[in-house]
Image (cartoon, rainbow over all chains, first blue to last red; front, side, top):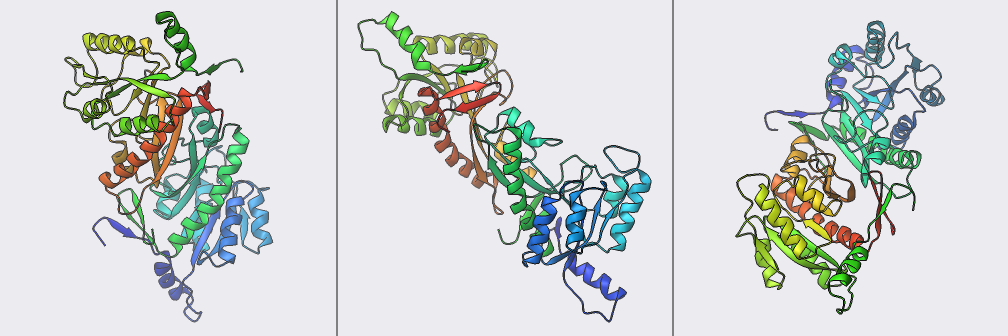
Amino acid sequence: MRAGQIQYSFYTFQTCFRRSLCYSKPVSNKSRLGVLGSGKGSNFVAIANAITTGKIPAEVALVLSDVESAGILSHARARKIPAKFISPGKFRTKLDEDAERAYVGALRKARVDLIVLAGFMRVLKGEFLRAFEGRIVNIHPSLLPSFPGLEAWKQALDHGVKETGCTVHFVDAGVDAGAIIGQQTVPVLNGDTPETLHQRIHAAEHELYPKCVAAIARGEISIVGRRVIWKKN
Amino acid sequence: MRAGQIQYSFYTFQTCFRRSLCYSKPVSNKSRLGVLGSGKGSNFVAIANAITTGKIPAEVALVLSDVESAGILSHARARKIPAKFISPGKFRTKLDEDAERAYVGALRKARVDLIVLAGFMRVLKGEFLRAFEGRIVNIHPSLLPSFPGLEAWKQALDHGVKETGCTVHFVDAGVDAGAIIGQQTVPVLNGDTPETLHQRIHAAEHELYPKCVAAIARGEISIVGRRVIWKKN
């Protein structure tokens, strides 16, 4: 490894951590995921399916939502995965301090290695980011750095691009600005409406996100500067 | 056609124009291209080849360069296409007023319908843009709106994107900001250097640019807002 290169192998430190906690249990090398979502949870379902079929060596330890009625919670419960609504508090686009503490506490208690944002509609701030630095990933419905922010598919359509797509990236303090793990392209067609384009991007997300989470869980990626290197590329 | 939609069929107005000039000559429906370049001219060669093989119903009426020794001029002359160096004047990144006038004059004299920028390293300004409004196209080595400006392939590599490409767009007063005609994606590979990535983007440009110029020459595109609609998409 070169200087400045970070090797991602969550299960290594997790294995050590668990060994100290429950010494008599057989040591698993599966990553423990914490999934956060505010909506239907289709990306969560895609990842959970990929775990079930053995494509991702991980388990979902906890699903959290800021929306009590969110589909993602029902999907998780139907799969017997611990799922919890935690009130986001008094703000509209971020967690308030109490909420932040509650989310971080729940995720720590569930001993998650990697936080997977799957349509979580709140920006994560300082305290949360510090607690899980470099271990939070998100999916965004455009080829970043084009069209960060809300309704990226609509932004793309209005701008008149011919190719858009989706991006899985690490989360840092910027908006949709962290190091890019993977991207998948989606063509814009003549007759596209925001809805048809969004649908096609969503389908691409369901392929890309499990692939990226699998690579992280297998310790197959490393970071040099802003570039994420895949060992098996 | 809906309101706000512009139909591109250069040869229509060109046919009328030529008819008034040279009434006795058989009327051709070929677009007349004016190509501007500062370098090797590989995009010019790709377009000229596509014309030769009948893929673009056009002829190159004139090639201009701001660099006396530019390869694009030799390529044009080898093909018996009128080719001319016109001094860009006193500025480094744009044409000065005299040069602007000389470029516009030469292109008008050659009765060009469409101006094709092929590696022309100067920004076109007011007078030139007004003279050929909506009839100037450019190719840029990124998926715009990501990475406008210089060395877009290097910007893409430094940013760590996994997909980049090239964009053919109309030229307006912004930098690489006009309506997008076509885009082609190019993956970024683990081992890429600026040079290897640039090379692969260049190869994509040589496919995309002739396709886009052909569609314009055939009158197959129209514009709605910022969206360029291809009739045969």
